[in-house]
Length: 215
Image (cartoon, rainbow, N blue to C red; front, side):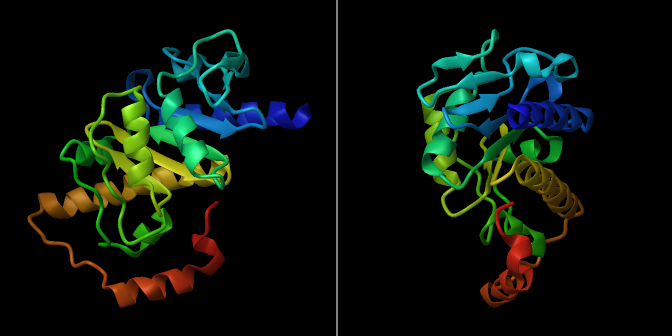
């Protein structure tokens, strides 16, 4: 019981911290934690500054509300799809962070211009195919973009990151935003990023070791 309460408190704290960074404008974005019965997710249409643990909603994989008095986030299908496809995922963070979202609106991903791209699990961070928010089609597109990866951009929408832990998923979502800011700064300056080669990326993954594993 105490462990569940602590997890709920951590979920609210993470949502509020990301909101304070400007990653969740206008009540956008959502966070979740896997539970034995499904997942605990932030509620729909409630400002994060006003959200408490009592507002969180536990949802079954099919969308049935198991606990909570509010509506779950409209993106519950996105979270359910990721948990179904990625058994190693213990948490999912979805933000509308400004630079990564701007890049997603060009329907472009992030190439291997910086070694930290490897934290996403591969040689790039893909942008998914476009689908309307809150739909099963978006969940399918996101899962496809996440194949072999821990993070993806959602076309004309935002960012998704998964982790074994909430801290890991949150940290990765923040790093994706940092990389997007750097990449767009290069592009805005008229510079062409020099991409890491396959051999260089192999060295990066070897150097990361446990640091680069799913957190």
